[in-house]
Length: 413
Image (cartoon, rainbow, N blue to C red; front, side, top):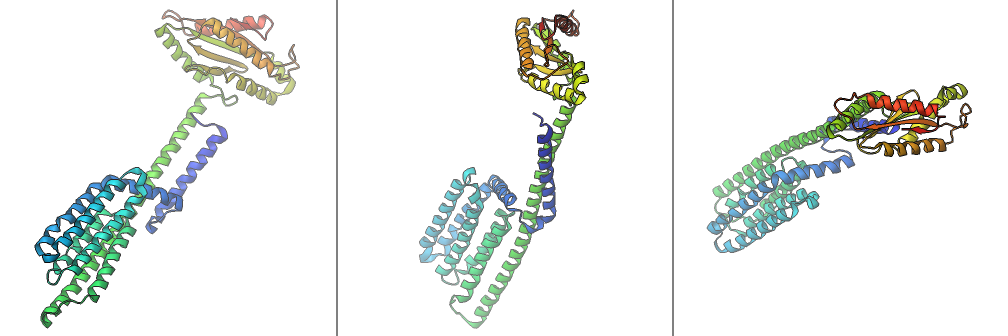
């Protein structure tokens, strides 16, 4: 239902304020942080998108990590069972977490838990390196590269989790690498190992820097898309609201808030055709405020307008069923359109209207009863194809004329 008056203005002002706010966010999206309320909504939105797109990717990555158990048995020697147990335990725990967490109730925990899972996998590789003797442990150093690539793929639009997981394991590797006592073979081999380790760390740094930059770009684009989608939704709401208001203005009488004559004629023609097809009764109640010219002359046009509004407000309670309509016909005349209603029921309804307006006790010194009253003409018929649509309106107008001639403040049907 369209909003009216102050409610419309307030709702439109709120929408425009929201639109201005989100437009301002487009220029501030480079900081990768919104105001608290929007940031909370964005995190829920991004977590939901992450759940839809990443469940299979994460499951595949965990199974890929588990498949490296082959290397545990190939080069693990006497530690192979220990390595395999650690790998199976971690993979099982992470697959269970993916199964449990990927639902809407726990959506906010998905990204933090995935980040923690990535850190655990990375640190497990360092544990494997520590358990094995050289040179078998060297093979596991290279396992950190696919681990780093998988972080960049799975957490692609979450820059902070990428940085947290990557730097935690990278710093742990640096500390571990330069504090572990490696078995010395000869000076040339030791120098080669040190050089390879330095190059490996340099390659990892470059990969990490590239990943962080790409993560920044992807999260920035994700935030921009989020803002643009909200702007589109807000603009759609605004257009809908303006469209409703335009429809309301084109179909509503500005003074009384009732349907205007143009809308009445449109609805009347539709109901007439429907009644012809269905062979249903159609009733019309025509109302006129008694001695309204005298009221305007006595109290002025502003008071007359207020009287029209009071009478209209009282009449609004009628015509509540589907297809029923209360409209201002012209000046001080009103029409109530009542589909599927017999003449006797319409007459009873009209008599209730008469009493309701009389009970308002609106002062009218120019009337015989010294208060505002109405006269009503009622007509009803089951129209046929041979009848003209205005026949019912002419009949209700004739009944209204008889009501006035019969002393006013009455109903003729």
